[in-house]
Length: 362
Image (tube, rainbow, N blue to C red):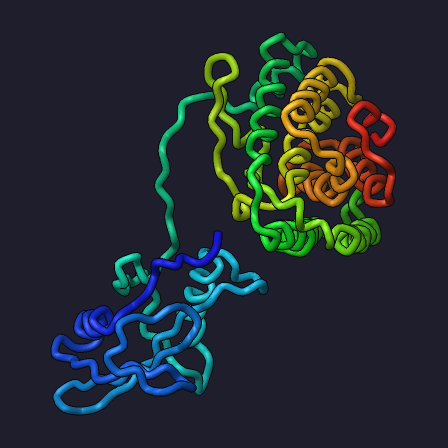
């Protein structure tokens, strides 16, 4: 999530980069920390200080600047943030008139080598996991209106999993980042509101504005709760859970840094029990009530969290905006969309949340 303390770059590494990317006979003369004294022959360099790179080719002096980024609380606390910022610089610097030109972008590996990142989109290779999506279970239950003992056991297993996951503390700044991103990021409440089409009959502009304003109020209401920071999954919904036999499952696509507010994960899964119930029968009750109760009971047994139910409002609101979105779920009826938004609005207005009394909020 944070800075890689092992990534430093030395004189030899810069020399090697010059001969690979500039000229095969380039000779590094000095590394000068801009704004500081010359550090010719310096053995190592950490994050955050731009270096003037002075070198010669055929006896002619030339100069470049080597830049890195230090972690900061302004959206660069994760290594991925800093890589993204450097990629954006490479993609944009050359298109602005009278601007310095980019030459390369890369990473400093743990041995201090400068490794270039070529142009193009990123990719990720992962393991392959066998199983069927948990969303398939919920869809079957919605169609048949029957939850088997295994269905209830799986809901409890997911509650136990999250309780164990959330037992591990995380840095306070991860919690602040989680809350800020939940409300203000492109994937959060602000971004979701922007994605709704103009003139939407259910999510009107006035309604979305009110949700945004209420969410900002919750940001300030919860601002002092950074002590709640825990390890999280970040996107714990039925399309990211693969079940095999019995209660054995694999989670996919940990998101948003893997740390933040536990309510993020709890609400992400729980709201889907409401969603599949409303889509399947127009009301929340059995059989989804059994799954809901099993999930919350197992979580509570695994982890005592007195404050959890008092901080869920903005996280439920975010997830409801996803499920009520005609972009993400175009086949959902206007009635279901309205009930999801009403649920989030009541919580944002301060209505107390208790899992055993959720019907009143719907």
